[in-house]
Length: 230
Image (tube, rainbow, N blue to C red; front, side, top):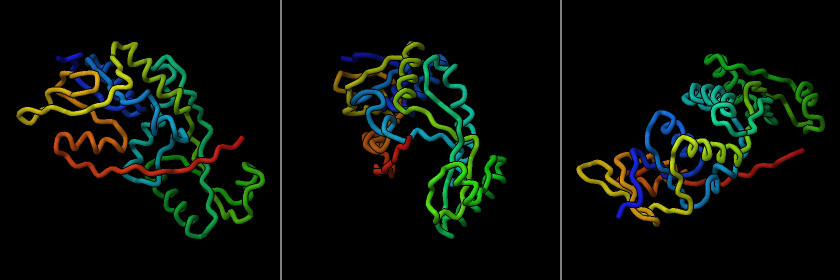
């Protein structure tokens, strides 16, 4: 027996899923979010929170520029704090190869109208005293910033619910039903949710969701380390 029905089911309670759900709800859609754990419990709540134009990937620069612009508005848009601050991003080169990469990224940034500054070692040490003597130079992106991952995900969750969205936490997806080439419902540990549109926003586990409808998505998890300084 169905436990709910909606226009759209979003699988994944991280920042991608909840932001998608929020803007869909704002547009007047009836949306349900299904999360197997708690909101922000995986990658969205365990990252550095860095927001930048992504000038290292030319195809992503327009999206990155729009992302920075959007983050500036989210505190007022959502009505809850994301703790976004815009203090810039510094990339440091300690080899000629890395310096060459920064020159290339600088050229890409300028072609797309993104503001960046190449700095010499002395300018960088003025910003970060005690930096390695091996530093050859760096690049500063003044528009980049940082948001609190946990607060941002929770802000989207609350704002989504304020728009009438329903959020099922601790509810895993066990199957996706398809008929005549279209989704008809999503099976979960809490029961069936009837919907004909599904947004798979489950991070690396999106591949598992796609397999349920016979689609191969080449996604895999990767582990990174981040050092927080005072």
